Amino acid sequence: MTLEDTEQTVAGIVLAGGRSRRMGRDKAAMDWAGEPMLARVVRVVGERCTPVLVVAAEESAAYRSLYGTGGPPAVWVTDEQPGAGPLGGLAVGLAHAAQAGARWAFVCATDMPLIEAGLIDELLRGVTASAQAVIVNDAERDHPMAGLYRTDAADVIAGLTATGERRMMAALDALATYRVSVSNPEWLTNVNAPEDLHRLHV
Image (cartoon, rainbow, N blue to C red; front, top):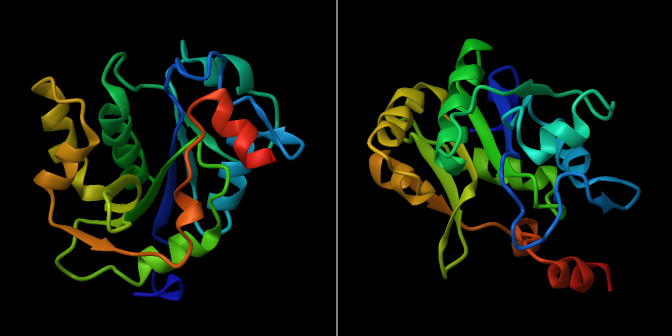
C-alpha cells in the first residue's frame, strides 16, 4: 500500500501523556532546534497524516505546558484514562481517529525527535489486507510506538486496558501484527533522560 492509496484515511496519533520521570521535566515542552519537541513530532507526522491527534490528559505535563500555545495543527485528545499508560492512550487515540474517518493511524511518542515522514512511508508499504498493525522491528526488538494500527482495533485495545493491562506489547499479541525493518534506525531514537538529549545534540 502507498500513501497515495490512503492519504485521506491515515491519522496521526502522538502519545504525550507520560510523566517524564527519568528526564525530570516535561519532555514534550523541551526545546528541539528552536521548537518544543512535541511540536517537532506533530509537524513531521502532519506531513503524511490528517488529523494529527495528541493524546494527553488535562493533568499531564504536556497538556499543561503546551495546550493553546500555537504550533503545528493538532487535535488534543484528553479523555485518556489516568494511569492507563500508553496502551490506554492508544485505545482512545484510535477511537478518535476512527470517528474522524481514518481507517489507519500512525502512532508514535512525543520523545522521538529524529522521526521523519519516511518512516510512515515505509510502514505503509508493509500494510496488507489481513494486518491490524504494522510495526518496526530492528532485529533486536519490536517498536510498538513506531507503527500503523487499524482504527477498528480500538475496542480490542480498550478491552485489554479494562483488564488492567498496560503494556504496549500486549496490543501486538492481540492483533494481527506485521513487522517491518526500516532504512534509518535513527528514526526510532527515544529521548528518555538528560544524557540522551546531550548525546543527540553533540
